[in-house]
Amino acid sequence: MADNTITLVGNLTRDPELRFTTGGKGVASFGIAVGRRYQVNGEWQEQTSYFNIVAWGQMGENAAATFTKGMRVIVSGRLEQREYQNREGEKRTAIEINADEIGPSLRWATASVERTPRAEGGGNAGGGARGGSQSAGGNAGGGDYFPSDEEPF
Image 1 (cartoon, rainbow, N blue to C red):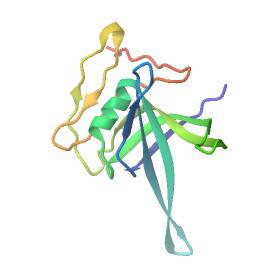
Image 2 (tube, rainbow, N blue to C red; image 1 turned 45 degrees about the vertical axis):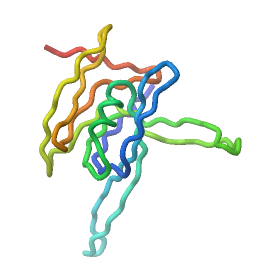
Image 3 (cartoon, rainbow, N blue to C red; image 1 turned 90 degrees about the vertical axis):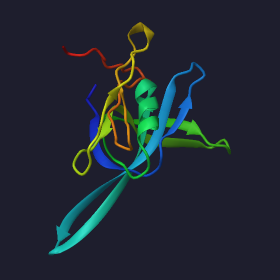
Image 4 (tube, helix red, strand yellow; image 1 turned 180 degrees about the vertical axis):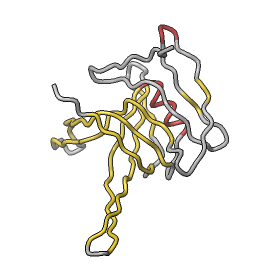
């Protein structure tokens, strides 16, 4: 299977919405806008693309507790397509980024990272922010892919 990792840098278009599965696992969803500037015949053009992001588990909970609309973030994850039925019973398709990593962009900001305690059974390492700064998250869950969250040292 081909690798479909995508990395985006953009601004949150809405505050993360945190929900929980029936099993108690957190899942946060939010949107980001990614802008691009380029020249055509000496004139600057702007193009903005919008992406839906899904973050599972402790990382999703950390993202919901940390990020707010307008913050600039870096998201690395997998491009995924999912099908669902809307309220009228019509079949729909959604394309979204299932986040493996989320963090603040430090290009025009600073951040203070605070580690969250590990959950029983190995849990996840994550971050929380203080004083309106942005912080990094932990591990993604959901789907069939579970990256190792063990520290390399």
